[in-house]
Length: 154
Length: 111
Image (cartoon, helix red, strand yellow):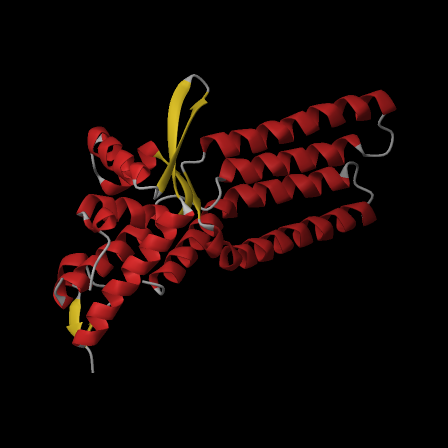
């Protein structure tokens, strides 16, 4: 093989890999929103005054919902990035989660101080809404980060 | 320099390149991303499986049958060696490849 042909092959490999990683978001927004809804449900049923049967019943339902979410994610994913690309993605993802949980806590404490009923639930709902709004951008950004990383290896 | 003939075929090179970036990829995703037909992907996927480079997993999502591909350790090692061989050819010639350039016009003199 001559050098020009080899260079073209390398470019083809790189373009294929970049396209692969950029064509799908790293995580689907419906999944993180679903987890947010489950978290909101947990906050709701653990508010003071909730009866034990309701807590038990809701816990079973929420656990089943979480299991269904994970199961659906595993079964319907079209592509999973290779594990060597995960560390770079994880840092961004954890930073995003840290900000979301931080916002949730600030709102929860603020509403609690104002003695607003179901303060934790409202805070978790706000976090879920933020997940829905920012999730697609973060997910695409992570996918692009992974694509840039793999570009450097070919 | 000898290049692995299993990977060297253009379509198989694209399939292996895609799978090298992934842990696992679904049949339709590979087909759509590479812009190839079902029959071509089936044929080349079988060739890669026969060479021991790709593992094929079949299952169902709901009632729909699905097929997933993943590179085996041998396949990943072969791909890594193939890329290293290409890089050696390119670097020994003084050419380089710029990331932002398209595949067809990706040559530029180095230095």
